[in-house]
Image (cartoon, rainbow, N blue to C red):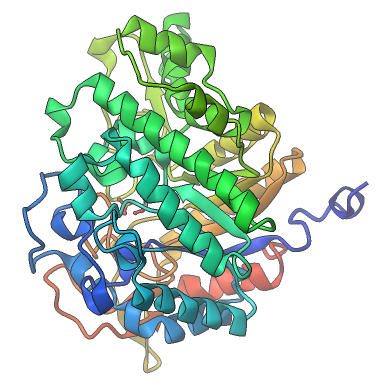
Length: 474
Ligand code: BGP
């Protein structure tokens, strides 16, 4: 019997509480110390409009929130909250400015050494995403991103350098952020320069295949050069409910879920599932899949991580398919759920559903590596101290963690929970700063003004209390 079973304590000892970030959304210093441009540096409006040809100054990501220079103070704030884990990504173009060089940029590598030094100083476990929506721009423009097999070799070289350099210091690794989102945001997720409307299905599914091979290949390399490393895949989880009990709607929902399950199935089982192969056949998509690829895919992951923000509905009836706003993927709007200021459905129970679903399906440890609320905040002064009274964020956090507690009691094996954007950063989909997720406020506005000063919001203290009590204060 485990301690949890004996004591009934919901969150197991050693549960990894923390926060998650991505380099392109908060580091800034977009061209410092030899860094090359990434696709994000030419996406000043997020995914809503096409990229610019060159980086432009109206792009908030170029300066971010200047984590590049303030990492030491920021990590100290995370430590003050009691973080056990800090998820960050490595900017590929800091290490390989163009992406296809043979030798890495030492100044870029040294930056992450310094970040890891700070984590170690505070006893915080790093959780590193190798590729988080920040493909080097050169790879996007020259090879059309992941549509080309050339990227597999570039990524393998990059991953090997990371495992060799940091493999003794970093235990938890994620190969690609939200790998399934390439279906919906091919430039941001797959570095694919061809506009979405001109991209053929064959190109898109070949890109997916190339990424899956690269991901499994990274796992293989890690086993050789960093044997203590634990490698995870990362999926954008969005439970999909049938809009009505009509079996046709139930199947439509399952069909939509298959689009997400497929990525976990390949990562956990090491081969394409039948329903996926059938979809390719039905749509006349012929991919280049070599025998060597099939062998590489057998290098399966140690755990499955995912982001969870919202759920959607699906229906077989196009007339009823009123597409709601939401995180990257579409779907039909759920009439029973309230939505955030950005139209994302608020559904804490959906998190329990995903946890149970993934655990039952894959039987490998899970890790919630993103969950959070993007909202407009107002900085106020209370007793001479600047703060944000963000009771809405506290409710979101608590409501979701209560469902996590339920899922653990249901028997789900969960490694940890990292709140998305513990410090305000730039939104991936809209490139705004006003869509704030942080429990730490950053004084920067959508027009680029602000001092970049940091202030603790009310949620900072609430999350601190939750972590200190290992969830007992929920
Ligand atoms: C996920 C991404 C993150 C993050 C988050 C919030 O899809 O992995 O990078 O940004 O969503 O989304 P947004 O920033 O669009 O509000």
